[in-house]
Amino acid sequence: MSNDLSEGRGSKSRSSYRIGALGPEGSYSEKAALLWSKTRPGASLVYFPDFEAVLDAVQAGGVEAGMVPVENSLEGAVTVVMDLLLRLDVVIVGEVNLPIRHCLVGRGEEDIKVILSHPQALAQCRQYLREHYPNAEVRTTGSTSHAARLAQEFPEMAAIAGQETAERYGLTILAREIQDASDNVTRFIVTGREGIAATGRDKTSLIIYLDKDRPGALFSILEEFARRSINLTRIESRPSRKGLGDYYFYIDLEGHMHDSAVGGAIDAIKEKAAMIRVLGSYPRA
Image (cartoon, rainbow, N blue to C red; front, side):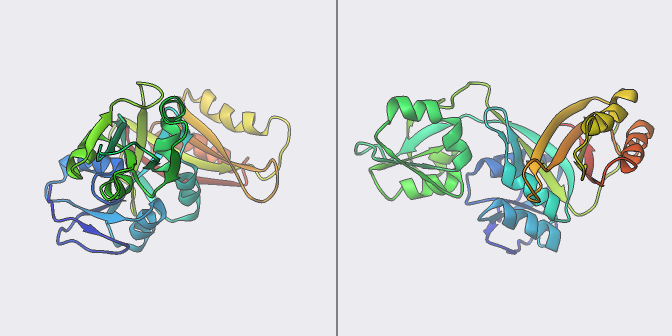
């Protein structure tokens, strides 16, 4: 893995295969990208300020792939990413399940008055913060690594970040394993511009819009999967922003879109739903 890393929207590296991730260095997105890139020798990372910038770069061809989180075992869906997947023209080509072990990190020189981190990390440590720092000011940052970088500058600040991030920024680990549950896992997806062939151990992600709310509408969609013995691994709803009670449904299932059973279900659903979009078929983590 090349360590020639750059930062910023649309920035380029000398590698022919670039992976976009949330920056700065030390984010959990970076860790997921490094794990996924082990099968791509010479790949390099390009850092971006937020998830939208990562996916915009994938769509525009600024990077070949983009790593973004889509769900967490404690806090559920990363809704901003779900909404971006609906809007942008990108394809899911892989996934990484990353165990998340949060630490409280800082300079350790003064009492902690301000605690910084990404909103997802703060939410995953809500109970710890309430019990141990009820009077501290909690501030959100663009990433856990950004929080760590800020905590370098002020002795009264601490950040929620990973152990490796603390080491990278020369910070002291003030407390370990502060997430609200020990089994804390974030699922990251890898996005690209073109789909990939079946591997025999795949998942497919869909977005379905029913348009009209009628009795049994969602059941009639799910029935097409059940009839073909297709296992659904996730179903989430997101507001369509067209009116109260109007939703898009995000569905993950086992199998590839080119499998006969999955393809048959998709064809049948096209006759029942106002819209079905295949976000991609990709190897299961």
